[in-house]
Length: 239
Image 1 (cartoon, rainbow, N blue to C red):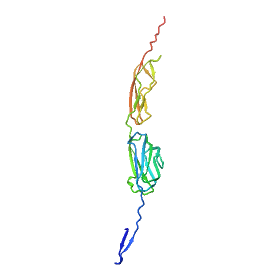
Image 2: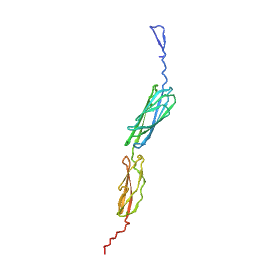
Image 3: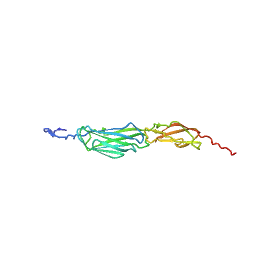
Image 4: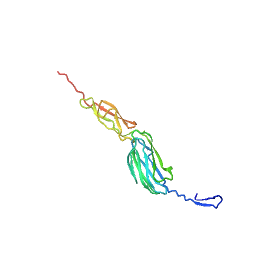
């Protein structure tokens, strides 16, 4: 009690004043985290952390820890204040954050190749200064990682018509197909007849299969037509 009254054996009341020290002002660190909703396996993603001090007191020695999805590694970071360290687990240290002030951190990380499903990243903050509201000290974001898109051909050879080579009942033909993919920058191309093969006289179908790292495929087809242009060799019997 601030002022208390006691009676001693019916005697006059004794007034006692007790001074209760007021609690020191506290900080109120509010942590925010955003990230992509979807991403490709092995792709680079970007997370953004925002730390705001909503309390009346200055925050000291705040440490934000972010746990990246399993297998993900930091590519680069950009902080508006403080220092950053770590690869799979990121630590962002802010020695001081005044009341009403905020700071941001952008983390660019590469997801594990071959990963799929939800990739979760979480973060939390602690500080030396007392925090009057700890319900906003931890956050989490989930990214759906998948690759279901097939490669797309960017170049398919036109049908090819050639004549036979001298002394050969066929012709060697070369060609190039190209393809791109949303998630895989290095699409594999497979030909039913490799470029430079010897094609016989007649029409031959060439099937090209484009395959990405997740096993998605696309196919294309063109024709190689070889015409016999070499006249028969006439052998005349001797007289």
